[in-house]
Structure formats: structure tokens, C-alpha cells
Length: 280
Image (cartoon, rainbow, N blue to C red):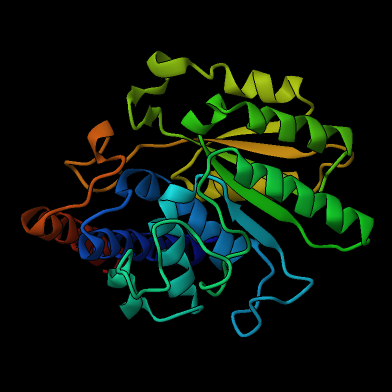
């Protein structure tokens, strides 16, 4: 991609992170760490990769995205709002009793959400079913799903992977956010999923490993995935939990905790400084 496009995506990712902080601070709850680590991925999908129409969220031929790690809804909501599915001003209503933006994605209330998720492992299973349905209907749409690395500890994930490979779902792309931390700490100590790339290859996937914060690497991986025939694709992203908010980075404590007023101010000031640098 050219420098202008890269900068536009970097600006969008920074604004997406600001939306995550706004949402979780407004909710006084939520999951900022894994939302921030996937900011570039959300940005790339919704501003570059996917064939979607904000005016027709249920368009039959749209590409589908399923947030299998549904607790990182603040990241998805921020992407959807910035893309124009609903007002950015609604993000701070996250988890409020009368808000349509609840703690996990709800396809019945949130424009742009393709599947209700939250119970880990079920999202990839639903996404694989969508991809299989597209094959049966001779549709050209692609299906993408994002998992956490801790989520790989769920057996249902690997059942879905077996299905995707068995049915040769080359319209299916699994993305793993490998930030190395889950709610209980280091994934390698809780229950190691490693080596993730080798396991996915053994289950029949074409696998690409990338820096999940590098738009050029993401672009190359997604372009490659679209050329793969006869098997599903997987993109393993190496990321930093809490990326670009200094006190959240690589801190498992920020898996599921909202910033207080002082932390909100610090986080927003840090992100505004990054944004100013990008826009200069």
C-alpha cells in the first residue's frame, strides 16, 4: 500500500483505540486490553478488506465477520461506529441497561454485527457454518473470524477447524490475536496453545504469521489468503495487549477492567498525542 493509505489506516486505528477507551470508561466495565491489541485488524477489515455496505447491513452478498472473542466488543463497536454503521457518540453507552451496545455483540440490536457471540469457541463454529453455507449457495462472499489465543484452549475451536478443512472452505479466514495474555495471565502458563502455527497447519490450514500492528504485513496476509484454494486460511497475529496505552500494555490486569477517570485522561492524552503525530 502507498504511504497515504497506510497513514489513513493508522489514523483510523488510533481513533478506534480512542473509541475503546471512551466505551469502557463510559461503561465502567468491559475489556480494553484485547480490544486494543486487535485495533489494526478491526481497522483493516472494515476500512480495506471486507465487501460491506453501511446502508445495507444485512446485504446478502456482503462479507461476514464474526468476533469469536466476543468480550472484545468495544473494539468491534468502535470499528463499526467509525465505519458509519451507527453514531460514534453512542460508544460511551456500552453496557448501560437501556443501550443497544451490550457487553457482547448482539446481531439483533447492533447494525453491522453478523453473529451474536460471547461463549468462547462458538464464534468460529458459527463462522465456519456461514462459510459452508456460502459454498452450498455458490456465493462469493468471504467469512472472517477473530479468536483470542486463550480461546484456543476450547475444544470446540478445533472441531470447527476440522470442519473447515474437511469441507475445503477456502472462503474462510481465521485470525488469531496472539497477544500472549488471557484473564488469568500468560497463556503459556495457564494452558499453552503453542505452537499455534504448526497446530493450525496440522489441522489443514494455510497459515501466515504477521505482526498484527503492521498494515503492510496484514495486507500481504489477506491478499495471500484470497489466492488459497481448497483449504481454509489462518492469520496468526503477534500483538501487544493494551497496545498504545502505556499502563495497559502487556498487563493481564487490563484484560477485563475499565479505566477510572484519571486513567481515562492519561489514556486519551497518550492516544491524542499519537493521533497528532500521525496527522501532522
